[in-house]
Image (tube, rainbow, N blue to C red; front, side, top):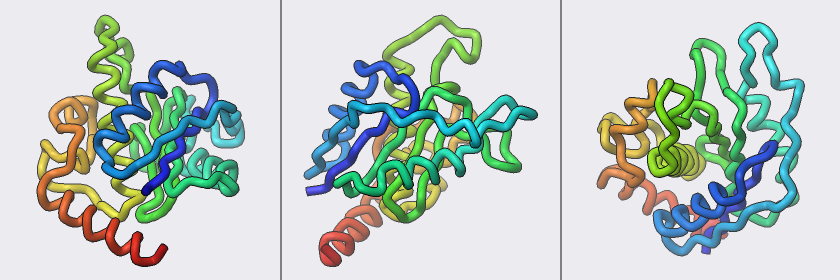
Length: 186
């Protein structure tokens, strides 16, 4: 059985984390998913004053170090700060590919960010899609060419809204092979 640990980075609504936990166990079979009750502090050294954003790679590294002793196969950090990587205006998340640690930001997933009214259902759908996408990377999946596949690269929120929260047949086959290989190693 695979164990995913969700780590809040800064204050995150526990209801959101509970829903995410329940949805992840539906998408990833044979998975136990827990939430770390103690939030990880937001690493201030990752903040870029010029951009008014946090460098996601530094946050990912801090999350990896913070969760090194955690007994989990996968670590999913959830934060509300705005993330970037060099050469991109923003990212919804980042992950080790393959690896153990992934990170998503809720900041640009909120409809209010784009001037729309709050929509809890849409917000939760977006969170799930980005979480599954980043966890897919930790399991060795790259980006997919199919716009409906959860592994499609989201260049904008429209890309996220267009895709499903599930893997296409090709990515699912690759995921199953990768999980078999991981099971053999353990």
